[in-house]
Length: 149
Image 1: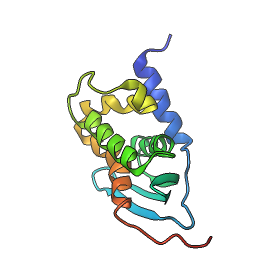
Image 2: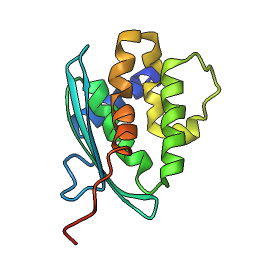
Image 3: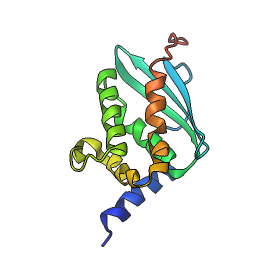
Image 4: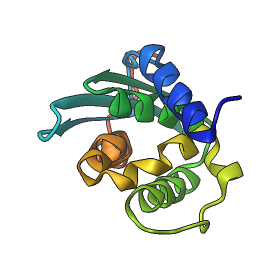
């Protein structure tokens, strides 16, 4: 029987090898690029936000399995959320990854992202796991007019 660590590892490998929502939105309302100099990870997050709701989100990621998996999970988790909900979730996720929160985070709320919770034991890898989330937050600062409709 698989241990919880093995299950978490399988989730990360699955999202890394088969990232969800990979690509770039042709006419995004928001976009940002992120780079992790420590690991060489590069990531682009593009969003289509309409009436304060994230209607679509895509990533392009090159780098380690942790950053690719985290980006993939980001796209699945926040699509359909309001901007306010997504920002709150992003901050909670980053807190889970970087602080000793014990059982303070809700595993049901985090879903597959709970697989990343062990990253905090490896401080050099926290940047890999949080790159997509910081890039998402930065994308919200980069607003473009929606065109092509």
